[in-house]
Image 1 (tube, helix red, strand yellow):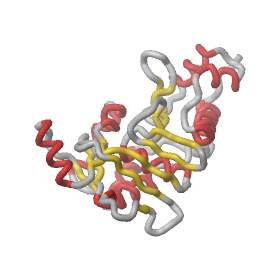
Image 2: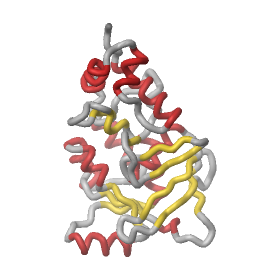
Image 3: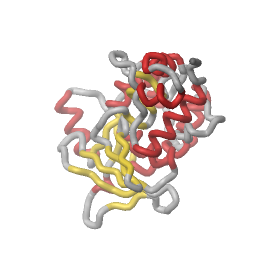
Image 4: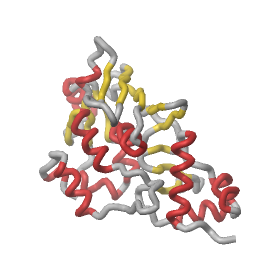
Length: 230
C-alpha cells in the first residue's frame, strides 16, 4: 500500500472539509486511500504542507487545516447546512474567502463575551450584512503577534487573532492583561486580506506562498509597517 502524495491528500482533506465542515480522521483517510490509520497519520505528517495543514502532536490527527480547525472553537461559520469552526477571527473570514460562499458567522467579543453575528457574502457589496440595530459593524480584529513570528508557532499566533466589539473593548482587555497593543484592523480590511490570502486548496495547482508573496499581499491591502513585515 502506497501513501498518497501531498496533492492527493490535500485535495481529499479539503473536499471533506467543504462537504461536512471538519477534517477527516486518520481512519477515514486510510479507508479512502486503502492504507492503515498509522500510515494515514504518517502521510499527514510527511505531506510537507508546513503551517497550512498539520497534525496534533499527541494524536497525529489533523489539528489545523487552515483556516479550519479540527475541533470546535468560538469562531463558528455556517452555510448550506454545513458548519465549520475557524482557528481565529481572521480565519473565520477566510472560510468564506476560500470557498467563495455566503456564510453566517457567530462568535463573541474577546473582552465582554457578548455575541457577535453577521452574514458575509463574497459576491455582494458590501460583503458584510449586520443585524439591524446591532453595533457589530464596529467590530475589529486584533493581531497580537507580529507577522514575522506567525510561522514560529501558528497555533499560538492564531489564538491571539481576536475579535472585539470596539477599540474600547480591545483597550480594556489589553490593560487588564498588561499586554502591548499589536495591530487593530477593521472587518472590511481584514476581509480584503482574507480574499487575497485564502485560495482553495482543492485546486491541484495550489501551492504554499513564499514570504515575498505574503509580504506583497499584506502591503496590497494597505497593511504596512514593522508589525506587518515577514
